[in-house]
Image (tube, rainbow over all chains, first blue to last red; front, side, top):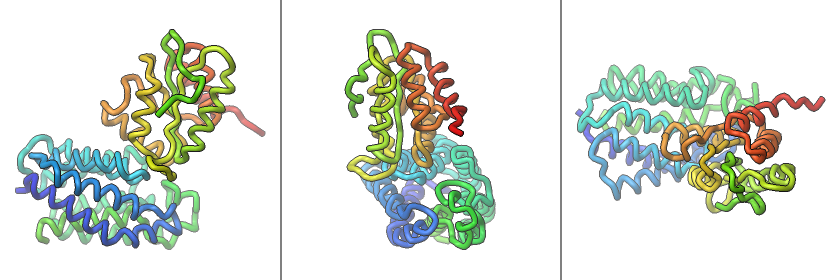
Length: 199
Length: 144
């Protein structure tokens, strides 16, 4: 079973991973975006980690709700409301249970991913974070390790795609050949989940 | 967050307008332009929410919330946003339910033309639905 401490450690592990990879995320965002994805997300997840050090939400849902709120307030780019909505809707779907199992998390994450698709209007194949998150959530029904593998493959799958959402879509065919920064950071989020689960 | 000079609401309840841009200068200038084009007399309260706190391009949920609170006279608030994170942040705040004043709506409109239409219409004392319709109609002003 996964308790509030597990979810807090997941968020802390994500913050550490985003810290390590911030330069790479920004580099990926340079040719097809506005070169701020790494620094924006780093600011957001540092705020998440700092808040979770001070406050200790008692349920998994409350941890994700608080983390999502921090991202919406602090990121400053589109990834703020997108990741914020992902975590808040997932947290809301978990309700006030003190512990949840992997299947409940998988179902809640699917609710979160659906909310992100609704907010941003993106579908699979549009070269966005959705291309990582949808296969990851599908695989999470199996194992955390399978979700990580699916997420990493999903991020890589964005390279040959033409962007249809966000600033990168203005580039048309010139967006082909670049791995999507949002899909890449989403893979970090899922990898941190697997790491926290010890897989 | 302060209103643009000369845009304090009158005695009647006017719809407030919030202009969200990635750029503080763009938001403030469009607010000033729309207010100027609304003419003399009472003009609707307008507040810019541009850029991120401390300067720089981006979107700040705090600036948006503060701007909406500043122009809320109880008749609703129409929010216009430029693109990307500005639009998504407003939508995310609206989805939260309690981050923006009751009767706040994101208006689907071109930023500059829609802002002018919204402020002019709101300044006549029109309700939120009329302000929203006027701003959205601005998509139809063909230029060639």
